[in-house]
Amino acid sequence: MTITDVARAAGVSIAVVSYALNDRPGVSDSTRRHVLRVADDLGWRPNAAARSMRSAVAASVGLQTLDPGRCTLSRSVALELAGGLRPRLGATALAVEVVADRTAGAAALEAAWTERRHAAFVLHDLLLDDPRMRAAARVGAPVVAVTPPGVGTAGVTAPVWFAGQAEAAVGRYLTDLGHRRFALVVEDARTDVARALHEGILDATTGRHATVEVVEVSGAPEAGAAAARLLARDDRPTALVTDGDVSALAVLGSARHRGFRVPWEVSVVAGSDAETCRLVEPQLTAVSRPWRSLAPVVDAALDRVRGVGEDGRDPGPTPPTARLVIRGTTAPPPSSGGA
Image 1 (cartoon, rainbow, N blue to C red):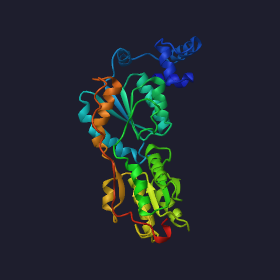
Image 2: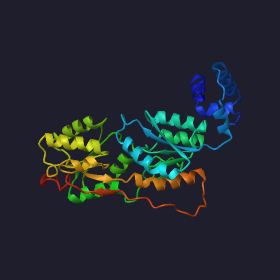
Image 3: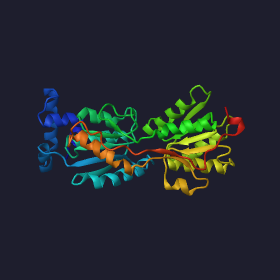
Image 4: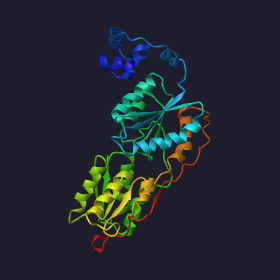
């Protein structure tokens, strides 16, 4: 029996249960009595670990990632970040927690912080208005947000991201090649990477009579099917940009299966790089982000949000640079597709 069970039975948030059970201000007397009555009915009792955590600082960091079955980008990012962070955290344990979706992640974060299981959290794959960031702000949990500046941070902490503005470089590069009809194929248009890619294309094409279409898909098979539909139109896009490497492979395969010569008739860009992007022919132009090399920056940010060794003067390590790697799937558009 946990306070999550008490919260569910009482019909209130985990934070309210925590305030009531620990006799903290912030809830009304009637709500406090209701929560205590429900807890007593359920037979809830604080265990020894929970009692000790109320008077001690949690010694672990929670790295939360989305179920890779629902978000294909999350698994590789989490593995790379975890691989880079673990050697740097020393005695501080790193718990990689997989959640079904962002709403479930918000509830898990709130419960973990309220029960003092983690001293801080690392979040990625953020939305502009991410429920996990709202939960962190609500309970005061320290969070390091691995996200482009201005996307999904909700004022909780300064974001951690790569130098180089590689997402914006995609739009500039394709526009300079002459492309004016774009399609952005993404799993969720609200995610930070999808938004950064979209904004980069919009900025690069301002005043150039371009069209930018955003198509949301659920996984690689849908990405391939979406590419087929887009390329079947008379006004088909000349550049297809995806948010990940797996969907880019599906888009590339779909285009070639339907007889399009890549890159001479259509260009394809992967919004994230992987070894598979270099194993296909032609090799995929992609945005390369050295996630493991970002770990020192994340580690320094964790120290700041936890108040460890903070003196306000050290800017911390320099973020690694993400870059657009130009390979064989991009070229100027056919003459009919140019500006």
